[in-house]
Length: 126
Length: 362
Image 1 (cartoon, rainbow over the protein chains, first blue to last red):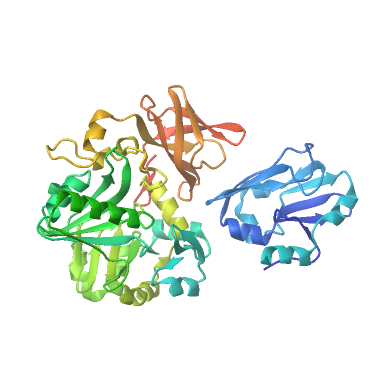
Image 2 (cartoon, chains in turn orange, green):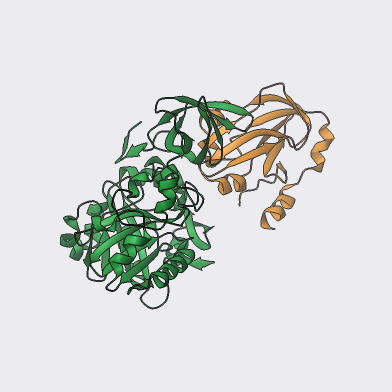
């Protein structure tokens, strides 16, 4: 199981990276892409839209099923990844390189409440 | 969970196993899309040993099947000929869809679905007793004489089977589509569930692993239930439990062609079908917008509402397709709308056969 130690994680199987400029980058974990199988459709939000934590932000669909992606923190969308929309298979190829969206969190301290790699590993194993 | 005799072979090949109607079956062996393409472009194989072979033997076999199933068993006059049909309840709902092979006057072979096998066998035994006919119903999925089934499908499937089974080449090379022949312990049918040419090979369970390995050695790609579903969807073939069930008439599920209402014979469900003619059309949908059509999504047409019964992404067409029950007035070529989450997306109504023998038809 590929769970990089420098990332944060959510219970909804998203990874979160804190950037130097105060934004966060969000994608789905390797475990999530493996469960979903071949991805064929990714729908991302518009830039500028505000979401509260745990609100549905995006949708990823595999041949098999549709799955919601949730906001890890409260904040607004500052950028989305057009490559993930045009070629959803990049998420299967490298889930940690194929980010979905970037957010500007309202409170950076909220990051501390997310899971670290060890805690996420335990969640997956449970 | 029940396992087929090939369970260990699947695990060795790195299959992701899932529960399918109480059976632990391979969903895929890595990429379901690659497996799909292998069948359209070359050859793939599926373990379908979870499906249940049922042998009907005895003097009244034909009389029993004539009354049991909706298609006309008398269409079968040549040994080895197969017939697709449905078994209905008294209300005209579909208990199961199945294939019947005619072996001789007192010897027929049925292949029924995995998840419905137990109720099918109970239903058949009940009708046989009610009608007091002299026939024996023998399931061949478990116990002594258990059979396994491997479907080999794709443009190169037949050649690869001849390579893996050189002794059976003469028996199956001349088989016409929808015919079967015996070769020693093997029962080889030129049938399938993908829209491609190929064989479905039934054989003693203890020989299945050897054949699976021999086929893999000729380059046949193992394929899971994921690819099986997108292949049958592209081919416009119904899936029991999704496109029809006990509450759906075969006439509303695109199965009118498998129902014989013309011959004077009676069969279970006939009266109900005659009283209640077709209410809906079973057609295909092609999503014009980006997104994925899924079962149970609502379809909005100018003639009324419809519902998707099966939907997914077509790896061959690189867009989303679906099978749907639509109002009788809906026509091929119409543009309709499908409710996906909070949006209404445009789709085109097409014939429910999207891909056959590697070619896109719509």
